Image (cartoon, rainbow, N blue to C red; front, side, top):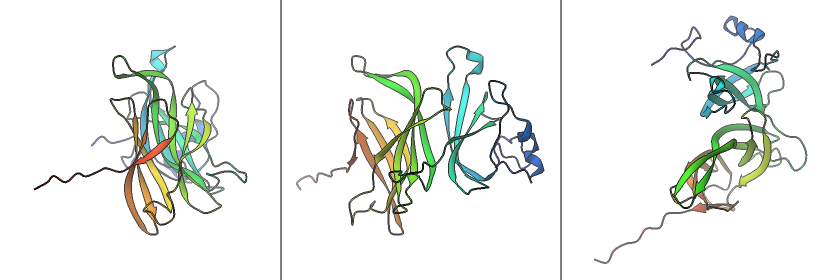
Length: 233
C-alpha cells in the first residue's frame, strides 16, 4: 500500500477549513495559474480515474480523478475533479458537475458515482477502438420529483468543463427489479464495436446488478438479459 500526502495516509481528503491538514488547499492555483476557490466538502468518495492526455504539451499529461462529494454550505451532492502527474499526489480543481435546477431536471437532487471514459471511434476494418478527442461521463442523477436515481451523460473536450446530455438509462417499468432506481454505471467497450454498461438497479430495498448494451452507431442503451439454452438429455 502506498501512503498519500495526508497524515492519515490517504491520497485525497475532503476540503474543510476547520481541518489543519486542508490548509494547503487555500493557496491552490489552477493549471493556468489562476487562483482556485474550492467549496468546502463533507466527504469525498467513489473515485474514478482516467488518463489525461494533453496533445499540445505532453508534460501536462497525467490523470484525472472524478469523485463524489457533498458541499458543506448548501449540502449539494456534486462531482469534483482532481489532477495528478503520477497517480499518487493529487491536486483538487473544484467541482466539475453540479445539480441543475428546473422542472425538467433529472439531477436536481444531486450528481454522484460517475464513470468517465476517453472518447474513442471503432475502426470497422481493423476491429479496434481508436482514441478520439474528449471525454464522456456517465453519472448517477437524483430527481427531486420522485427521489429516484437515473443514469445520465455529460461530455467534455478537456475533462474540466462538462455539457450535460440528459438521461441515457431510465428506471425500469413498474414491478421489475430496477423500477426504483438505476446508478453506479461502468462502461466496457466490446470488440464488435458495441458497448456495455454495468449498473446497479433497485426495487424497494433490494439491489442487484444489470447490464445494458449500446450498439455501434446507436444512441440508445437497451437492457440485456442473458439467454440460457438447455440441451436435450
